Image (cartoon, rainbow, N blue to C red):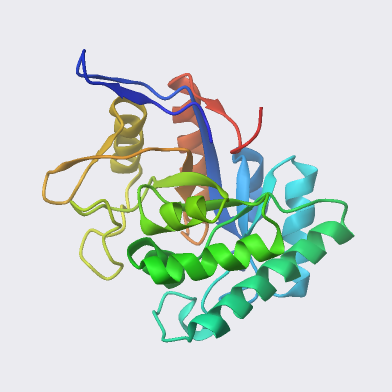
Length: 265
């Protein structure tokens, strides 16, 4: 979706990234969205299943429109008690209906304020399940396509989410993370595992710089994992998310990266 870096096998060198989206998950009731939105290029907004309600959706969409930030829906398992971070068993047909309805709800809010959805990014446990399970990824891709086949699907770089969306005819954006650790298979280290969350700013910045310059992350076991990066995510529910957003934005600009949403010219 963007001018991603590439690897030249002849010279054994990676071409540094020159363009990248910077996104954040918002509308989750953290109270810091207004400080974050001016620093990012796209936002994934909670649709009520794991967080948010009609008022927060409207408020967050209006904030994004005021700053020219691309708007996406952030559908989840219907599990507000656990913030959508608990994997639950849902029949495929019911999950497809739930995801579609969540997307349609936010799309209606956007339309009422003169905007439109640009992308979809599953949240939490649903995101991680779709990354490793092709059947779940296909359910999500069908739901997105049914709402609007021009929507872009954000998914974990190189995962089933990306492949299923691509096969369904959707545009995709490979997503990487600033403050999450990776395992050697390219998946995110599960929450609850020691070191899964990168708490301090400098290690997060180092991970981002390595992605920009060399197209890899270093997994917990030391493996260098190549990843395509179209969009960089910051979790908006961290207490220090605004400070992280400022530092990440500055790092991208220092590296000479043009910050633009997927599909934006």
